[in-house]
Image (cartoon, rainbow, N blue to C red; front, side, top):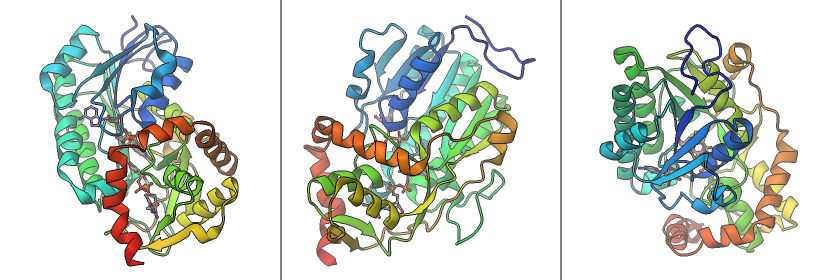
Length: 356
Ligand code: NAD
Ligand code: DAU
């Protein structure tokens, strides 16, 4: 196994290493596990995931029998378990994605967000410090910066100004990770990425929710005036960026990741309706999300110029391909939208849809 070479601009050599991916059964995590197995075939990927409602082992069924993917079901907040995993699998680096990730759920119930995102991250950092793990990649979010007006972009020096319980919990974990670098010298790198889209996204998030509602001829609930803006990035571009930062990022460095694809929500919803051949009469403007951030937009100059990463997917084509993925994988989303999902959907949308 090749260890850390601190003299080299590339942190890890081409030989094998053991990377712990937390949250590897979620949307970005499962895409990342696939991406790493394909693009870093000598690495062993140890995947620690609690399998909450958002975690789905079925996303990784193609890797069944692969000796270089090891799945462990468990909670990142369990220190004993985390110590055991790091020790027995001789973990060289951690890519930390496990989180409660949905803003609306953090408004319905913030507690789980503090437990997993804040305490869980601190447990992992402490375990990494004691085990002398070579590098800790903290996957944060652009939501830590708060909301933009009609112009301007978030840079890495934009002050943090989180709005929702979700983004406040991510800002906390982001700063705690940086504190472990500053105070204890742990080799931490932080990424702050914009909105992802692509296969295996849980259908509570805008794009899969709208595709699936449209296919079921159900109302498409657009919050507020539909003019909130997000900067969309294909999940595979995100996976490449995360790996680039892990391999080449500067210790203690923060890297914004974005897709140069700002769109209003209503434009996204209309594009989806067109793609699946459904009428715009399905659009239903509903009560706004409390504290709804108006606009996110990323300046990704630093990661491009320092590390050579830039997005490769073209939004309109990749969105069409994503819609097609949901059309082709009906059994996947039918399974994840049964049972508990229905209860969530009712508590989140029933009153909103009835009031308007
Ligand atoms: P997701 O909700 O789809 O997946 C989260 C995964 O974490 C699930 O598999 C879940 O089972 C697991 N998990 C939750 N709590 C856990 C715990 N206590 N212990 C172990 N595993 C646990 O989330 P996602 O959209 O894939 O996001 C992944 C990460 O990327 C998160 O940290 C999120 O904040 C960040 N992020 C997401 C986006 C986006 O657009 N989705 C953008 C920027 C950053
Ligand atoms: O910016 C990065 C963040 O992007 C990540 O950190 C989060 O984990 C991820 O969930 C995402 O947060 P958003 O709140 O931006 O994503 P969401 O898909 O929930 O909403 C996108 C936009 O669509 C937002 O303006 C709210 C709006 N929306 C969302 C839903 C679910 C609607 O209008 N109707 C809906 O039903």
